[in-house]
Image (tube, rainbow, N blue to C red; front, side, top):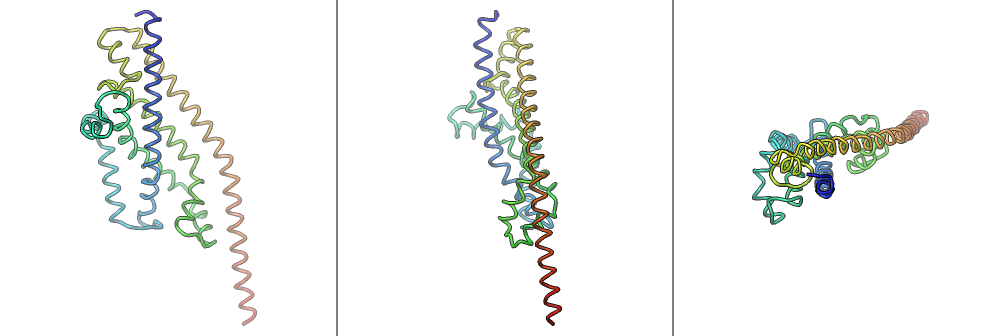
Length: 247
């Protein structure tokens, strides 16, 4: 196959891969973020401690993560057809890609939220913050770690999308299978591999840049919250001292 025939195929494969990865990543973040936060809130010592809910959520997440992606994709074919009306193509591939990524990202969120300094949680509570206020005020502290988790999820989904090409999902993986494997077009196989490596590298570089930027802003914000906590404690101590003198 010469370059003039190969170029439109590669361009279409790249567009389909970006399409699948973008939508499945977006769905995974929207569903995985609250799931991961809920796992932390309901665990022992959490703000909404509930052992039963935590165990059920944990079991569902673990079961979903235990399945190899190819097996998950095949098992979800009836559901995929019900949702999209098709079992092959980029639209159909988004369903198993998103479902496979949700529990993966939820565990990354759980790890990120656990890394938050308990002192910040205490600061918000000391200022009279409710559970929702704690989540809203403290969760941004984990943004650098969350962005790192999103980057890892997107990179994983790029690999999953290439794997989905085996079952006719389209994209770069589909090209590698149809032309590189079945038709022995070695040059197509090499180019698709290079495209995947470049794509993963670009995603990782962008993710790392955003993480470093957020870390710089996060340090300044955390200092401000700690300062407010110190002032609150000093005010409380002064009030207690004044009461004792009055007595």
